[in-house]
Image (cartoon, rainbow, N blue to C red):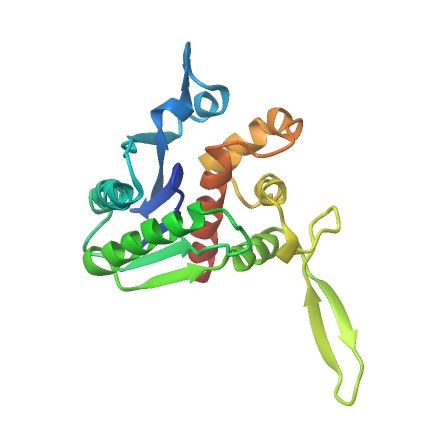
Length: 237
């Protein structure tokens, strides 16, 4: 079984390709975002050993009309890179399951429109050239499933006309799965004793560095999302 998981982003798309009982991590990022004057910036350097970086570039444009076409061409080039990495790292003789995170419509940022364009183009190419077996996880679903992957449910009996059992999922800090932040997503990896692969082990090893930060920095936030999509699909498959 091949499992492909993607967290699409205009500046830091994360891809995980699982095939032949092994997985590879790819990150499509801007060179200017990942490099400083002395080489890789801290967070990109920390996971350099585990991530295959692909540098993307967005061209400048003079006006709105030109910009819409330039962006489409750039998105076409980047999504071609993603498809190429997938096809070069899967076993084409086996079934393929794809999981991709959907859009968060809570943002009022104009870049949401660009993200929808980019993600839609990517989904179409995945559907046409890789597999029609695609699951789109909403951000809230990913958060809840990440919680379920790591934490035991709180079992509550609801007494009404017909008694029923309700399962409530929270992390060790009492935060409901559906309300997870990027930090809670990260904690669901390092607090899961069953996750022992190289990415989970790496995240646990650098927990002291990450936990003092006010947010989860790139590329970790995107890779963590793609990683958890992969683990959720792996568990279900």
